[in-house]
Image (cartoon, rainbow, N blue to C red; front, top):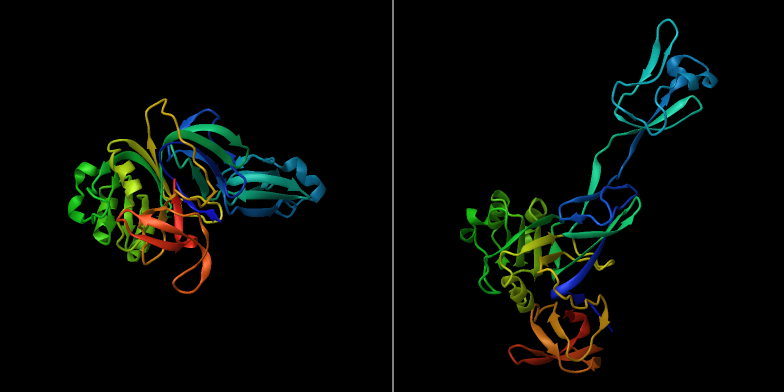
Length: 350
């Protein structure tokens, strides 16, 4: 059975493809350096068009319209600009009622694409643009530490890492936030107080990394400009020790935080990328593998949600306590407890 992998790696070679949802324009050059919040491409997601009947507007036959047209395809126009004319003693003209771009002229008509709100695609991480995908986006590469989470509020940020959580199970309270953390990316523990999120926005922080968060805070977090990443789940869960060890020893390092939602189809997860010294040698980062004896695993369902252990047996079909026969394996936890668990309740930490 293939194992879902959550990557938590001190030094990794990281490559991310950033693509627009519709064709648009790439705004960076190959070989250029970017940070997480830089724009790399843009597009109009919902274009609006206006069709002008020039023949009727000018009062001339369709076959005579062409000689009066002032704006050709691909030309930009502003509201009030003359599209065609003037004609006759009265100097009749047709003017643009909105700003936009001329798409085509034919049959005595002109089609104008109205200027609409532009969707901006941002880099999502700091690195080098190694490949351009014409009209769609870019591929960015870097070497750094990598910590993936389970939930994000869809925002991006970059800043210095500031450590507040002094242990994996510490609660983040409003009293722990102060002005010295302004514009930092904060590593906290569990969060259940809405005042913490309000202060994070007010300071402001450039990012908030949490072990866990009360599900009741999701609507508030989604409205924040500050990126929020939850590493281990909802409720009151401690941070897994692998992620805590890596992050808590990286204070003042520059980090990129991409709190995009977890996409189970593409495998994209919210993630934190930590800067590392130049020349650091990266480790392999497999995206998919099979469960095997010796894997470090984390339980992703109750009643043992969040516990870390090691597979001590080769996965096989087993009869579980509830009578169900399913692929399962024995797991030895850090507290020396051993139990057999279905593989669907586990993820591999790499």
